[in-house]
Image 1 (cartoon, rainbow, N blue to C red):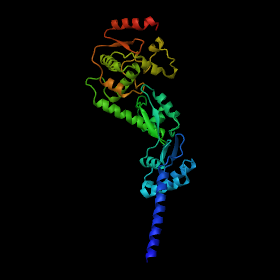
Image 2: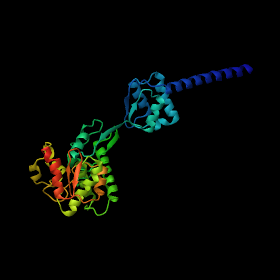
Image 3: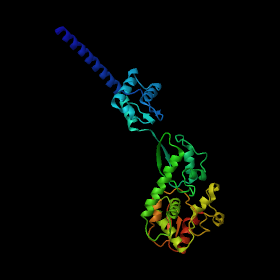
Image 4: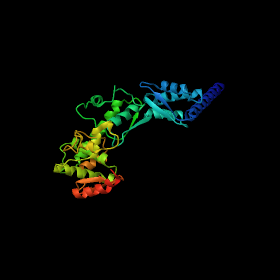
Length: 338
């Protein structure tokens, strides 16, 4: 009996030692850095299981020991994490362990790519950025205005100015339509928020009018300190029935044929965007305005100025009377030979 008990004890001890050794080996392998010499990405397709993730690492020779993959799959199953992993593209950095990779998949911390629309871009310029991005899934047959607006169910709207300028981060598999819908919704949200907080007495009957004015403000000045003044002059001229006489709208109307030199004949050629020839706002925005320009359009500065002219250094000289304005034109532009 005693000999039997000793045998059982020794057997249990051996099994415990083996289990301990296996547990230590498993922990050591799971916490050891993977064989990642430089940053690289691993993609898990939709519907992938833990076994697929382990296989992907094996294909890339990421494991430093054959047992690493086995331990990772077993650990994921025992912990319940195998059922929590998410599809997507994951970034592997040097020093990353098997357990840390598993946590990335559980948390769904996929690689995010970027598309950036800066303030002042035209619609066609923004669409070229979308078309050139290799990480987006391109589903649209073309990026013409009619095609894009139909794809986001906004066929009745002019596309110019309707996409909010921002940096958009997206995971692999995102389509061009999804990104554009996000940018459209962002602009709608910002415009609604700013419209709800607008000043009183503005010459705009609807948010779309404010968006047009914001786009003009965006193109007229790059100085944040001038936005409210530009908006103030323009709004005041609208109220008084004066023509806006703003160069950026004329340039927009000329389109791709504009060579960088705005000539007198351009100002005299009638067209829907020529605010030297037509009273009121142009028929659409002329660019993608940012929130600051929208806010300026809806909160113009106080004052009596009706004119402004570029000083040639990015700033403007504002004037109340035509005589003051003509003097500023002679000082800042005619002397430069413009």
